[in-house]
Image (cartoon, rainbow, N blue to C red; front, top):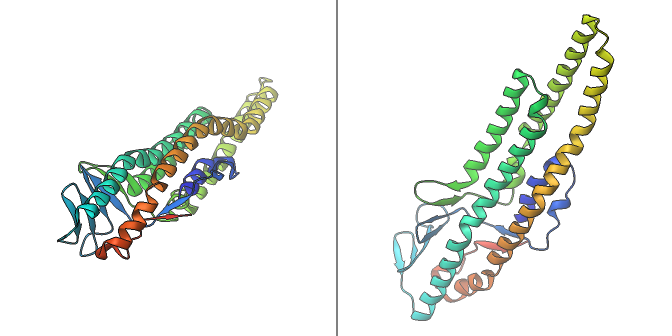
Amino acid sequence: MFKRLMLLLSWLLVTPAFAQGQCELNIEQAFAVEGSQLSVGEAGANLIRFKPDGLWVGDSKVELSSAQQAMVEEYRQGFVKQTPELVALVEQAIAMLEQTLTSTIAPLLNEDNTQQLNQLINDMKARADSVAGKNQLGYYFKADDDTFENLIDEKTQQQMEALMQSVAGQFMAEIGAQMMSGDGASGDLIQKRMEQMQNLGNDIESKMRSQAKALEAKAEKVCKDIQALLPLEHKLAQEIEPLKSFEFVKAG
């Protein structure tokens, strides 16, 4: 899952370089943190809630020994602590994409193409918000193994391709208008536009690399911190009967 987050960051680079971290794990179920409560799974009989006063499966409180309660509490605290950091990674990745696009492409666009770029960005942000975020109740994460790949889906790629085609058309129209004016400046404009198009990819890559490096380090740390909870999760499944099939986090 964390490698897929890095793929989201590297989408504009056309290289998987930021997906090569050493830590990899997948979060298998949706979860939420509301105050001090960690809820794992979908609402209903299979919802598992880790609360300061104990463990609940569905509407039933699970009887625990003092040792089991200590394990449940350690696990709850670990995930409650890491969830804001995990959600922040998704939000920061989308913000990074938005900043990169607006700082590199937006200055070149006319009004129509600016609207097209804004629509592209808003669609990506809406998909990200449907996956992970913070609401009035707390933090939520509705992810599976394909979540981050799907944030940049086929529709997004088509929107980006259409935008680039529109930009090329805009440039050609500007050059044509300059040539029709007959003021002799069309050659300079052609050269300028060609340089802008040629440098655009390098500008995007440079900005993405400088920002993604710091974000990748954060993702690696969060991944390792969550990965450290895996032995405890396995022990919970072994020693608490209602959790015998519990699998929340899995090593990649």
